[in-house]
Length: 210
Image (cartoon, rainbow, N blue to C red):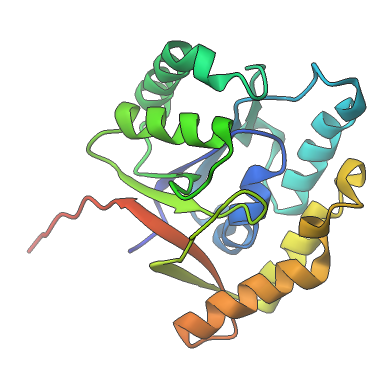
């Protein structure tokens, strides 16, 4: 699968999700593709998370993404299921406006209610387009990557640096550099390379050309 020169749409439920699942890949691709990262909830209804918006923008910048490629919406955390139609209509608008070639969403193995809801609506909105699912280790069970993308040491370090911007979550085990590196080493082992990020395949749309 060729990523370079494509329009890639990354969809996350909350600030930090996209970086946790795809940070090294985003850094690896750099400016070789047009990328748009959309997070549905800014978590600002929780007073304990008032800093995560700025932390998210700093995190994305550490991966090399300009501010105009990062969108934060204000859907209510843990209540996505009450906004299914609004989420679907927003995704349909994204499809029309951005015209992505490839979509990244949460794995279907993810049990978080918001993650699960948005993935289901993405599969509806982006019919006919390849969709890959990324892993957020805290809420994914039975996740096993069947699509592996090699990344390098610089990409790994950039992902660790990006997630270190979240001072709000500094005490969370799944933000620790050791775990982040170990996960990419494990996926690299499956791909017979030093480091990789892993995804499950929700839909592959292939076209043969002469």
